[in-house]
Image 1 (tube, rainbow, N blue to C red):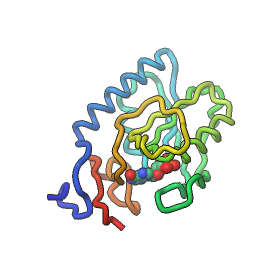
Image 2 (cartoon, rainbow, N blue to C red):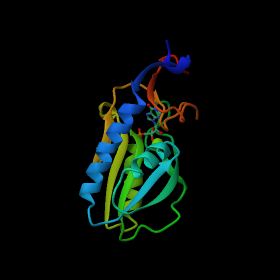
Image 3 (cartoon, rainbow, N blue to C red):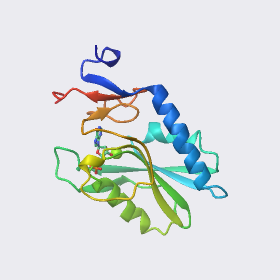
Length: 181
Ligand code: IMP
Ligand code: MG
């Protein structure tokens, strides 16, 4: 039986309960590390939105939120490393303690581009928190300070992650069947 009867999905990788529990742990670590400071959470549209809001609710230091949108051609079928900003941040990050929130770090090309771009805007600090990490496919080594889950080399959807813009609203993370395209 496919998860929730969705034929394209093979199995649930992380349940809602597992996700919630792990996000609480990561939020607690962030709250400890940034004690006495305030954080600027920067979400990368659209995938990180679900994770960012869940994470933010459990962080116990003051925080602000901003978003940027990217066009990425670094997926499995496209040429790697081609990323551009399609929607920029609303506000400056100069002097702020920035935590970049990603849905998934795969090859690392997207993250490298974002870190280079944001570092040029003189934040006080710049770290990365990703929901999922598929380290086995990393091409560009990028510093990931916080990760919720390491995942196998399979395409996953749910909790913000999409396939052709679908499945973002699933509360769990599921592995897609190999014949998805
Ligand atoms: P990277 O530049 O290869 O690290 O690309 C990461 C981006 O590819 C993510 O932000 C996602 O948009 C997309 N991506 C990579 N793997 C998956 C997946 O398994 N499901 C959904 N999107 C993915
Ligand atoms: Mg993304």
